[in-house]
Image (tube, rainbow, N blue to C red; front, side, top):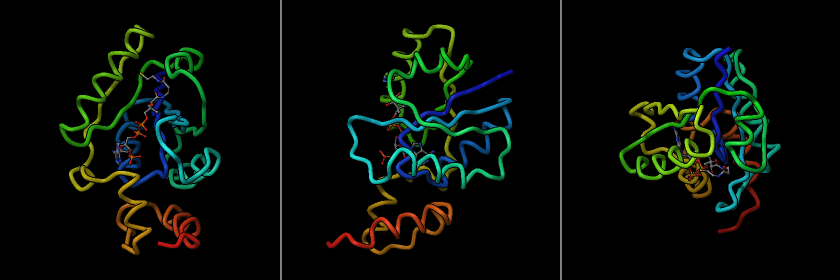
Amino acid sequence: MRLAIYPGSFDPVTNGHIDILEKTTRIFDKIIVSVVHNVTKQALFTLEERVELIKESTKHLDNIEVESFNGLLANYIDEKKACAIIRGLRTVADFEYEAGMATMNKILIPKVDTIFVMADTKYIYLSSSGVKEAALLGGDISLLVPPIVKAGLEEKLKDIKL
Ligand code: COA
């Protein structure tokens, strides 16, 4: 079975991430979306909330599992017996960072490769922090995130005073 891991902080999941999943679920037998606590980022949603938002947003895809993990990605991939890591590429600006991570992971777990999938052109400038900032400032994010994420953001941000 061709199992791939799609790791990320997903704070929160956006339509850009869903687009990557819609493309890659056609290629792999199963994908585990792995929500990671990124120590360099301060998260708005808890790991459990992020997992739940992804589950709700991917109900139309039947070969997906969603979970969270802490620790080294290479160890997690080995434990799951996955054959690939999926990462989305938006613009050339992503390349440097992604190439570094892919190289590091290749050294840590040589039998696994990172597969890059180009983001749809309408999502190339989309990011989770961009969505959070737009929502905080009252922008309409309906075209950028699934409805459940929009509702979750409204709930989280309603008490934040600018
Ligand atoms: N559509 C929309 N947004 C996208 C996107 C797409 N197709 N592809 C990437 N992004 C955005 C995300 O929204 C995110 O935005 P933000 O910075 O505003 O939050 C940003 O690009 C990149 O985030 P993400 O894909 O979640 O990756 P990350 O850099 O937060 O985390 C991990 C990368 C989790 C894979 C990495 O830190 C990791 O593996 N951690 C585990 C520990 C480990 O093994 N470390 C060694 C790694 S070599």
